[in-house]
Length: 331
Image 1 (tube, rainbow, N blue to C red):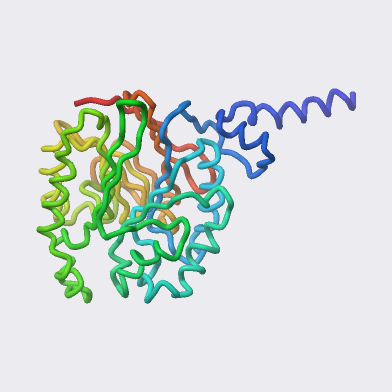
Image 2: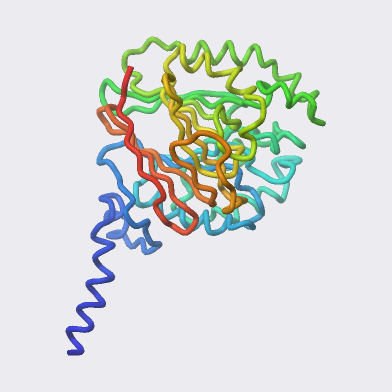
């Protein structure tokens, strides 16, 4: 009876492990014991990454829970990198690359070994409150923080003739209402016209190898959150370019929830991943959506090596898989 009881307990413990991804098993064999996300999927040979935003609160507002769960997720799918959608340090960004808030809100919170892989970040509105350039310059100090400029792009290979174009933009100068803020002069220096011209040039890349175009910015074009009734300034500024150049995904933050929305008769799929710390679980959606979750969490993205499909998974701070979505590549 004792042996049977032990066998049942052992089986109950091993079954979830057996259900994990191939990449998780590889890490487990090496000695990893940090845990896993139940039902999290991975695509063999895929380009996989995680996205979170609006997180830098010194470990408060469940930020530490987010970090622990994120470490499990990136291990499970063996994510190549992590993307931040901005508002990296609350409440007012940083003063310099030596600001202690780097340690308090980033280094000492996202300290887990699996999180020591490249982070690609952009600027949010809170990052502009003090010294936005310091977040760019921190790339020269940190071995994992990457923000080579206020807007930038790169490509990642999927297969021999397939790649993904990632475009990171600074949406702060593109929002007219931002110019009423105390950091107005800093925004004026950024030349929004120059950035949009650059964006058009990057998105018009004629390479037939580009299977997916993914743009990352802080402010969403569509939201069902607190700002749903605001004037759609970002939509008016960017949607024309996104539709013209067939941007597959626009990923943003700013709103402190998780969301997916595909507007009818539009090409671009819109994601919000801005729930890296503060969130209101009682928030009710105030606009159209296909998926909406007002809880701290993040998203993972997996792009198949053939470039024909993309898997998106939304995960809560508690490690619960909230949504699983498949998107087929189309032109």
